[in-house]
Image (tube, rainbow, N blue to C red):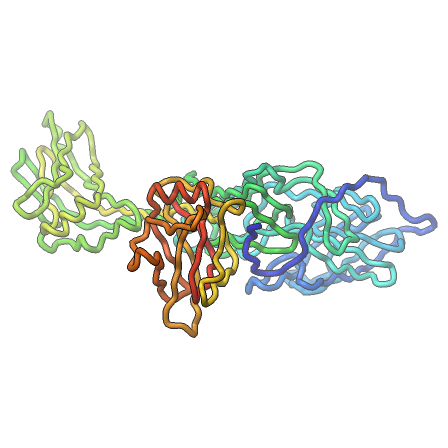
Length: 516
């Protein structure tokens, strides 16, 4: 079974529990009175907000818990603006042998004995470096002799990171591909050491939203724990309404109290960084009727080798003013050497009133600009005012199929087999790129990898140019690092049918994914 990586704290897996609701009645002969409970942490830590270091979670001023038998929430007695690892909560409740509690109070609908009916909201607010305080659900119990609630998490958390390359992310939606519930109303036994829950009304989607683009940092989505048979799909939306997806294929388990990391938003397509625009020439060149020309971007006027198309598409945007008395207007670009046409010619019949011309810098055109001394702009019946280089950085959708720690050993005897019944490549399309992340042994000077399909005899993938085709081994660079290869259609088909086997020595596999 594939699981996420665990980063912060751990707890046991939550499993369904069938419960019957009853009305909670105070113990006979006990009157309601003012009572104070202490609330602290269990091991591992389980509280309400994450510390800035991302390792600990603290109670905050104003936190409120629901207590069984109480008509109103109990409020944390912490000075305004303070955060503590333990706190006291005071409120009115009838005396009882045992008390049960839920944080936050707003999430708790009712109690029936030790069982609480709780709602995990499907739309949560994005808070940098922590989770929505109304979604981080905790449960606890205490006896009258102790009056101490040791809270534990009832839900799990998915973490993602935003950095300076992530774009203006304003929402993230998660969908269970197999239709399992990610949020909704559930019943949980507060007395259980492992919070057992049963969903009574759920949603297969949950989202994290922000009024403004998310700042660089870590963000957390609270989700119902469980096993998701067909994986999870994450949809990121930016402020311009563009979307990108990140798909985690195969069976995934999420445990209560565990933070699972899906990586940085920058590894997605469809959402780019802010478009990088730079003016590379500005002035005034009247073209007349093919009598004028602009050669300021030729013969060293601009460094065309500075453009890297592997980061995303690039365009030249020319601002023009048409001659109003004319009836036709024409635009042309040539390379500087002999003013030759590009192999992909640029000749455009302009429309009346047109003020801008956009030309894509294909690999062919860019290579010619680099080889043939730059750019000449010509034409008829317009004046050239400005040329801007516009480039986007586009990222590739990652489809993670496995993560963990698999030591390949020293003698080729410990292959990682993602084949046959364990095959997680059924959806990989032709033309995909396979990525293997790994660490290397620090006490060795060389490290090897061998990629094979799970077919009889484990034949090596033919997409790789091997130094030794007969052996079919790849020499790895010192890690942590990544090996990638573009799959031919034969290998992609073999992975879909038989899966993948990874062999090697002196390396540890940590993650496998594919990109389109």
